[in-house]
Length: 163
Image 1: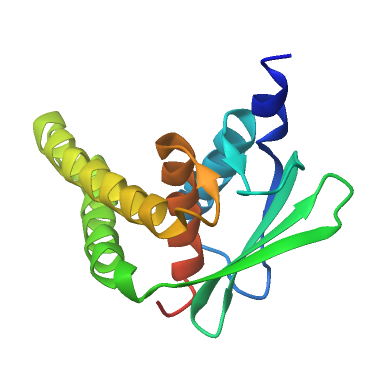
Image 2: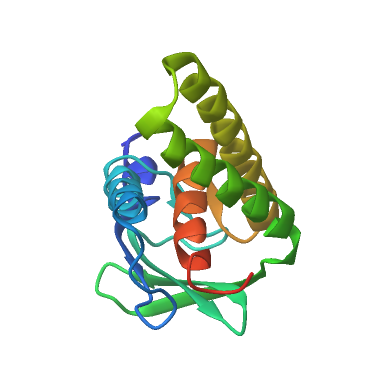
């Protein structure tokens, strides 16, 4: 019986709102697909005070804000959390700049240079995940690894949207 809450407090499906995003570059599409796959495979996701789950999550942009639409297993709407992206602007800007450098470097730079850029990229990604975790506190219960994968999807939305 101890595994039951963990089994219920999870995501079983994640989609990105088609109206909020466009097609990204192949590297971006690949990163998005991996993040969704990893998120479904291993996550911790719950709603404080809600004894439901497992959950489905649709992530989109609404008036320049992040919209997290949570529904139940049968796709019945449960909760929508709208989150300002303003606190993420600096991290997103820096993250995209370093990603451009990283994708350029993997084609021409030395392994040491690639590793140094990748360390910076991972550091910014972790910073974004921690900010997301902090901003969701009390609204959506999740762990750091889940927040990290969710942040990857937030960046996927930003590739088209304005944060």
